[in-house]
Image (cartoon, rainbow, N blue to C red):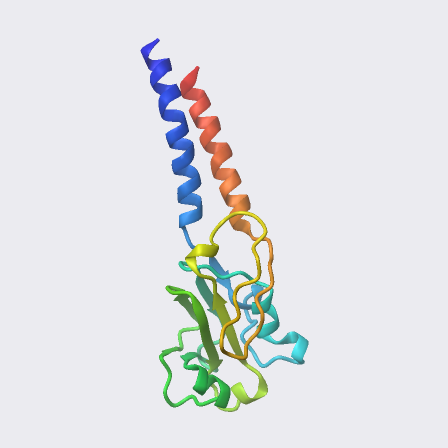
Length: 180
């Protein structure tokens, strides 16, 4: 009898813990949605900025680039260097072909190719990370305007909600086994 009462009192706490942990983790997001997307775009509609406009990036997410490290690189740069395609003063430079950058603060991040002439041909991307106050489930309002000329951030659905639902379901099933 005492075991049954204990399991009833702990069940809501464990369910809450599963929900909290599922939302506290950042996602790994492959740039362009697939390996090999880090390249000179064939058209404006093929631009990585078009892809980034459709995604929601949160603090704690990581961007992952998969590319040929012998022929290209990824530079994180300032807004000014992004606009002028200046590759000489990057904030960070990655050449390994499997680059992962953790998004640790809200606001815009500017990336471009380090290969000669690629930025001028459109191989660059702006990612806007939402602030913590926007981290909730449901339909999000459009973010406040930022004083830079970059892509708008459009709402999308992601796997985070599916992952959270799966974790909650598994948690409830496991707890149900102990409550019998």
